[in-house]
Image 1 (cartoon, rainbow, N blue to C red):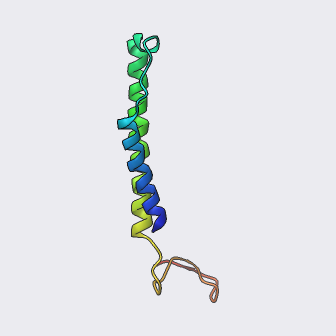
Image 2 (cartoon, rainbow, N blue to C red):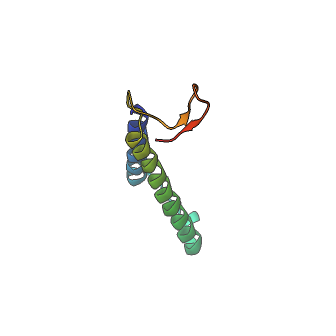
Length: 85
């Protein structure tokens, strides 16, 4: 569970940092419109994928966490067979 909280905080912190970041393109770099547009599209697409993948990982960690006494899928040592729940 702490890992899921860390993942969620990582996503929230990354979004806040992106929104409040003081860094922008310099004048020399920002006078090429298509290059800036391409960079912005790349930034937003990779940022979206980053958020979706990390939130999905946090969801899976929370939903499928180990619960004491719960049967889990895996290899049974007694019978040597695979168990699926």
